[in-house]
Structures are given as C-alpha cells and as structure tokens.
Image 1: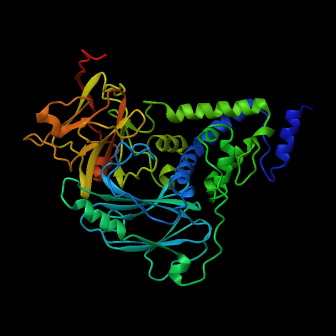
Image 2: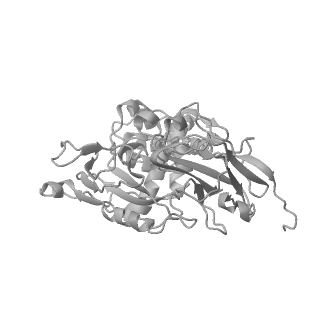
Image 3: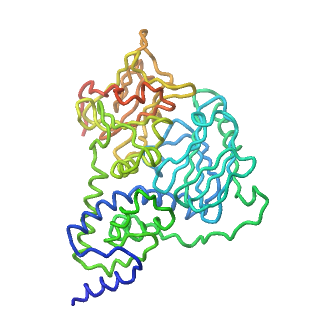
Length: 464
C-alpha cells in the first residue's frame, strides 16, 4: 500500500458519515466540475461578504453609499449607475433582525434580500409592497419563532448570512434630488429581535469561525474547504440533498474537515482539471448562456423556484453581474455581441442602437430604463464627459416621430449628437440594459430587444 493511498484512506475515515470517496479519476473530475459550478456563486458571495462585512466587522449595520457609482468602484462587476445604494449584511446565527424602512412615494424603491446561494428570496418596495413604510423580520433557516406584533412580514433565508441591497432612484439632473434620496437612506433602521421584543439577547455567535478568503485557494482544490464551511451555515434544500451527497465523493459536505495534503496526487490533478473546466464554462467571454436574442443575453436571476436546477446559469450570472434583480423587478439583459454576433470592440467600430417609437422600453409607473457601459474587466469606463450610462432620465434627443438613436463609440459622434452618446472604451466592451419595473410586454418571452449594430469602421489613421 502506497503512502498516498494510506493517507487517502485515513482522510476518508476521518470524515464521519461522509459518502465514500472516489478513486476513479474521470468521476473525480466530473463531480468536481459539477460541484464547482454549483459552489461558484456561493464562493463569490463569500468573497464579497469577506470584504464588506467580515473583515471590517460590519454585520448588522447599514452602509449608505452617498453618490452614484463610477469607474473607481471595483467591488461587484457590472455595477448599477442609476440608483443610490445602501447595503446591509446580516449574521443571523444567534437571532433574527427587525428592519424598518420609510415610505417612498415619489420614486422607485426596492429592498432586495439575497441568500447564500445568491437567490433573491424576498423584496420589499414599490413593486411588491407599495409605497408605505414597513417593518419586517429577517430570519435564518433554524429560527422557530412566529411573527411578532407590529411586524408586517417575516422573511426566512435558507442560510445564516444574508445580503440586503437597497436601491433608490435618483435623477442627478434635477437639483436637490440627491439630497432627498440621502434623507430616505437615513430613515432605515435595524435592531435585533430580542431588542424589538424587550427580551434578553441570546448568546452572541462566534465571530472567529470564518475561514480567511484567498482567491487562489478558491480556484484550487481547496475550494472544498470553503464550500464545506458554507454548506454548514445553511439548510440544504430537500431537492439538492442527493446532489450534495454525490459531491461527497470528493470530500464535500456540511462542515466536513478537508485536508488537501491527504488527497492522492492523481485524484488531486483530476479535481484541479474539473475546476479548470468549470471556470472555462463560467468565464467564457462572449458565450451566450440562457435565452439570447438580438445579441442580448436575457435576465438570469430569481428566487429558488425560478433558478431551481439552473446551476450553470446561476454561476455565469454571478460571474457577469453578481446580485442582479429578479426579472419582475428589473429586466437586465447583457449585450455581449452586436447584431451580427461579433464581440463589441470600440477600437474597430462605431455602433448605434436605434429604437422605433414603439420599441423604446416600456415601464410601469415609477419605472425607468438605462444602458450602462462596461469595459473588458466588467467595470465602468472612465471617459471625457463622465457618462457611464444613458437612458430615459438623461437629456436625450428624440426624433419628431418618437424614434431614438443612441451612439455607442469611443470618440464623440459630434456636438449635435453628444446628448445621445454613450462613450465606449478604445477596445473590448459590453453593455447592460436595466429596465426597472418592466411592463409585461418587455417581460414577454417572445419580446425581442433591438440589436446594437455597427455604424461604421473607426478611422485609426494617425494612431501609433
């Protein structure tokens, strides 16, 4: 018996009640690929939680962003440039929290709740609960209580950690509008359930349990240790118990110990190959995943019911635009290629997006739409006019018949067209359209978005 096999057997024996570990190289690779695709959104969420909540110690506290995001923002890919954000990370291990939000009557408002899988498990706001003030409980999966008096709703997460995102529409072209939004932010309140009830608080959860996030480890066989920790912090859904048990063949399971050095080298190589293949699927540039029409890759976020079993789609969504809205809240297709199927390249071509009067995105009351420019790195692009998105709240010029042309290119299309110009980088780029509170016509599966088309080649004469 070789030392590697002996170590592997000892490793297997150390995992109580675990599925028997595989010694088949092909099976190890395929299970790893499937497991990594499943785990990827959870790993990305944990990475973000580490930066925004664990390291700075900001669980249970609102963080209010006081301005729109610009090219200096580098936390979450494909950022929103339409609304002022607040965020709230919750650690619900010891007890639930009670959140109170103000009435917001004159603009779009949403309070999105995202679980550890990156499912959008609940919303409060314009679409779902209306414009009035609201108080609600957010709990983890293991809380056994009932709705307290004076509370409108109880929202239960499948995991102990929750991200809440508040989006409040702002019109920067209206004087004083930003100050109104900042005042709305300040009216948000949070307290523990025990404080709300006037009861003694339960013992505090251990703040030292979190593994230190390392990107290289998260993209190696050691992702298993992160995944096992995360699985131990949630209630595995009945529909996925068999799948998680299958993952156990490479050492995956809730709170299971994992020792990478105990894994035989050939199995480890197979696992690494599975991760590589999974990342190729997730990160394939220009590949269209899900429903694709006219060069637009359509919305890929939702609750558990909407995303059930769509693990590859969920992973690609997390890579391209972490924490996106559900379709009913905001229809957010990504433009990855033009109408000819070619990747966008501002160094080679100029582009136009031309709407007939009946093709301009339709929205419900308080809804709005925009198009955001993203560079090859999926973040906003610095430009000479500091414009990172364009839409129905910017001062665009429409034709007399109601049609609209948007110019998408690196250089100015001319002073008379700059009101309709979305600056592009001198290279590869992509677009995100956001239609908040989209009408049914827009959400209809047969609806086809207008394609972005080449309008001409870039004159590179004189460039070095």
